[in-house]
Each structure stands twice: as structure tokens, then as C-alpha cells.
Image (cartoon, rainbow, N blue to C red; front, side, top):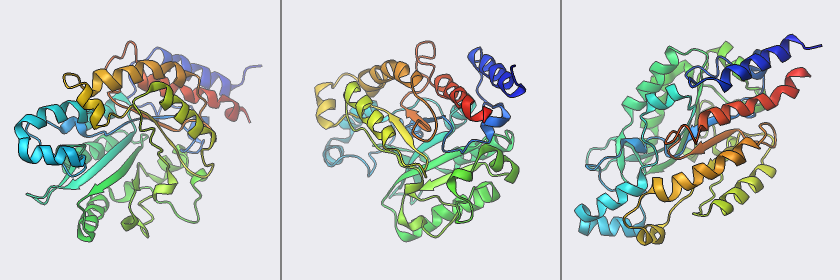
Amino acid sequence: MTTNMELGITKWCESIESSSNFERWMGELPDCLKSIPITYLAIPGTHDSMSCGISKASGISPDSTAVVKVLGKFLGPLVKPIVLKWCVTQHRAMEEQLIAGIRYFDLRIAVHKPSGQLQFVHGMYAQEITQPFLEIKNFLLSHEQEIVVLDIQHFYDFTCEDHKKLQSFFHNHFGNMMCPLTMDKHISEITLRWMIEQHYQVIIIYRDRMGHGDSQLWPSQSWPTPWPQTTSVQNMISFLQNGLSHRPSNAGYVTQCVLTPNVWFVIRHPLSNLLNKCAAPCNYSIISWLEQQQPGQKGVNVVITDYFDFDPAKFPFVKTVVLLNRKHELHCHI
């Protein structure tokens, strides 16, 4: 006999299969899936999420390679157009990504030397941090059952005071929306249901020792994010598969479905760009691999990619990742 729980899962799957709207996908999950650890849910995310803010007017940022920095210093107007083509990984602004269903954001922040501002970067300066974080807060205030994971991956040219400035910003901006990670609440006990009940909507991973001691800033080891660092799809998939097989059971996990060009790769393709030479080949190849994956303890959790929505018909990234959660059906029947 079919149970109400099975009917709920089936109805949800049918709804997702026919949907192109993932604005409230977390809130629409069946109740049993909301009770699974957040680190076991399949969650779509973006790689270098705020590179969408990079423009022709942007300057070379401190995370660029030494070669790019030197060339940018002496040949700025000639080098910047080339760098621009290889450092932008997303076209959509923060609010657009949220509405599309993205719930994990890979963020890199630098101190902009001339102004002292904290700005998002990826090879070039993107934009000051306030507006995108405001877009996140406003979205969450109107979507009370959605949560986001903000992964502050890198900090460039930061002093201790800059860390204090950024941490104060987070506390002042998000306040009680920030989910703590404490000794009395194991990471495997943090579920979407529990977060909703506690009115927590923001998980901040702070990958620097300056975040230690603040329970509302999750340490790096709480959510490993191994980097394939290759331009080969085959090598990337082998790396991802091996990483999942060794995934720690007491942490979240980021699967990076990305190809990464080095300087020599860019030099060999001077007239091309990251979308055509890396993102498109990667994304078209990865869908079939993703569909075979299982979420859970030794399976995928967060999955990230470049240009997540560049070809929705052939690369339905958000839908593919969200639908993986139907494979938790076994847990729902226990």
C-alpha cells in the first residue's frame, strides 16, 4: 500500500519535473526531506558567484597570477580585455541567482587599495560587497523557508582590522539569521526543518583562522571544497568521483564541477573565453554524471558550476541537482 509519505515524494517529484520555477524549492520540499541533515541535501551553487560584477572598467585584483599583475601594470589597457574574458564565470547578479534556485555562493573578497572598500574579486575587482548581501537579506526576508550558504573562500590584502570589519558587517547585516555551529548541536543534527523553526537562514563559512572563536562563522573543515584544478573533463570527473568516495561523514561537501584554465591555456586560446573553452564543455559533459549521483553521507551535497544557466534546455543545472533529493526517498520511509 502506498503511504502518504510516498505520495508526498511522488507529487513533489512530478511538480519539480514539470517546473521551471525554483524560487522556493527548499520550502516546497516534502516534510521528510526537510528533516535530513543539511549536509546531505543536494544543493545547487555557483562558482565565483560574484564575478558577474566584473566589467571593462574593473581593475586587476590581488588574486591574479603574478604574470597577469606584471603585464597589467605595464600593459593595462591591452591586458584587461583578455583577462576579462577568462575571469567572469557567471552572468547573473545575486538576486537573479537566488530566484533561479541557487542556494550556495562561492565568494572571494579583497581590500580595494585605493578606496579601502571590501570588494568581490576573481582576477579583477567586481563590486563592493554591500548591495549583493542586501539582495540576499531582502530575498530571505520574503522567502522564510529558504536558506543560503555563503562560503567566504578567500581574503586578499586583509589585515586583522579588515577581518573585524567584515565580521561586524555580517553580524550587523544578518544578525539572528546566522546559524551557529556549536558543541551542543552536531552538524548532522542541523536540518532545514530545524533552521526554519529557529529562524536561521544563513550559514557563513569563513575560511580563515580569524573567524575561529565565533560560533556563527563556520570553520573551513565543516564544509570541504576540493578543487579539481584541470582543463580536462575526464580528469575532473575522476577527481570528483574519488573525492566523494572519501567524503568525511561529519561535514558538508562541495563538488566543484569546473574546469580551470592556467596562464598557458589562455595564451593558447587568445581569441576565446572561459565560457566557450571551459564552462560549456564541462557543463554539457557533467549533466549525465550528475544524474547518476546519490545525495547523502557518501554522496553529493553542494554542487557548483560556472555559467549555471547558460543553456537551460541542454544544461538544466538547478533542476538536475534539486531532483537528486528524490533519491533520499529510502530515508523518508524509515
